[in-house]
Length: 140
Image (cartoon, rainbow, N blue to C red; front, side, top):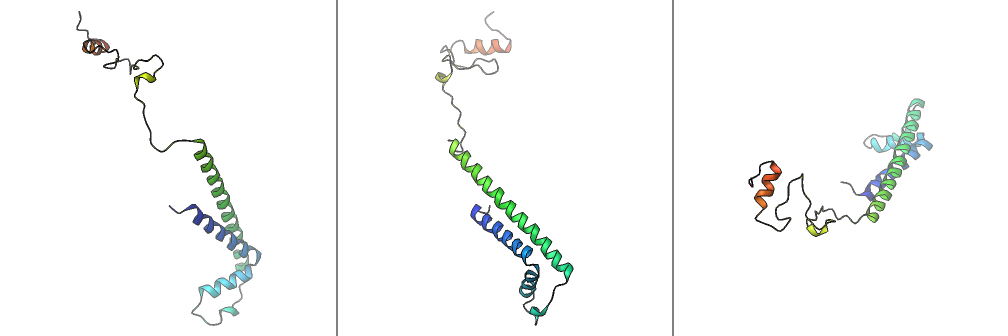
């Protein structure tokens, strides 16, 4: 994943290029022609047509809007992540507390109506408790 700082730089450069193309579309088109045609002679003498200038300006407006929106969303995501990390002590590891002493009545809670083995301290009634939960009783 790309670091947040690098994303912000990329979004800002897109917004700046869009601003340049919106404010000075002819100059932007000339610079683009000079940069994209280095092997040709007299690229500085090329003159863009009116429809191309309008297209460069429209592209610049879109790039400015996209870059500014991305910067805004990035800053909001950063603020939300900071708020979440401040309000939470979660370290990324789920833990389940299995201590019986933590329940309100001090006993191990029943799971789905089945007595948990060893919850009452009598190991001799374990088979009877399990069979009774199933509906089969061996004490009759």
